[in-house]
Length: 319
Image (tube, rainbow, N blue to C red; front, side, top):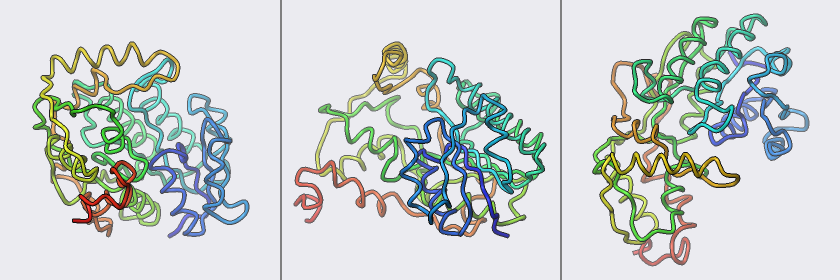
């Protein structure tokens, strides 16, 4: 059954905008809980007048969390960070923040809950990111046993932070971290968003953990070669052993503390790269939700042309 009013935490982010658009198309009233409501105004045209409303909310503020969930009959938590900065730590956001949202939802009688986690979430992991994601899952389910947990692999799409990051790097070669052998199973952002809405509308998803991945498994090297193919350029692949990547990660963490300096790599991300990021086959996935996975090769040409010499008219791609 379709929910009437949904509060989406982190709805202005990469995955969030796709989720909000789909919910609006379904006819739901959507409250978008974000730290910067003005920066989320682009979401309002996704629905009719007054249907999509960005509201300021810091998930560390329980009163604000309670306010944005008032009157909602479903909650989607998409809040997550790729690296830590100040008070924005993995534990504060992906564990305690998720716990606060779930606890307040329980108090308000909201049982329809979707928690966005990540493939590789594991309390025993050597990655702080993965441990915090696992702790967040556990906290959510302790308060909302009917919650659906989604664990996607790398999520790609027009505004992704993977293919776009490498394509925009002004370097003659790409770093082949750890030899490029780590495996990934990239999943399309619209497929992830559809999975969210399917969970919200089906009791069959209650209390289940879903692993979300695309139809193809790639090594890290194969993904970098795919980036070059879509760019229509040839770059070198520079071997970068894990111990050197760790040093670069440390520098990235230090420099990343400076204002307006993007973080390319952290030591925690290097730790994650030591482990494959593919479906285990032990959990239900997109197919079980009735979602057909789209291959990266089909979607990438729709937004990677911005990086090609000559754009979409690059003769290398038209040949």
